[in-house]
Length: 171
Image (cartoon, rainbow, N blue to C red):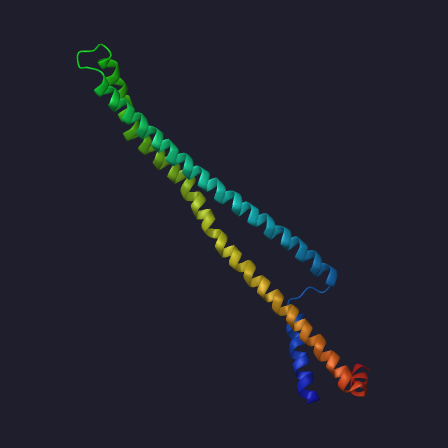
């Protein structure tokens, strides 16, 4: 019984000591730094997502504005009679608005998509991977903490069950 208990304790001790910082204070300090980095990372992700949403809203509003202007210019054509002096100006305005809506908006939209939205989207797609790595690290730290508790409890049970043997083993 005692030998199996010792084997189990050694196994857990080995697991706990592998890859764990040597000093307790250093471990706590690195955990604080890591927590600060994770908080900063989450803040950057939140701000980047918000920026991406704002850019999409801006592009949508700009598209709606160009469409509205083209529709207004078309309505102005119907408003002015063919014999009116202002019909020529309305026709020019309609031509400019239609050209702006069709060609300029397409160029601007493609440019914004390629230079801003696509890189932002690719960058945002990287965040879940990093978050998954942080979750794995937290799970491993939780495992290490549980192994520590198991080792301590095994040591306590060994002390209480056979105090003479435990003292001899320590010497």
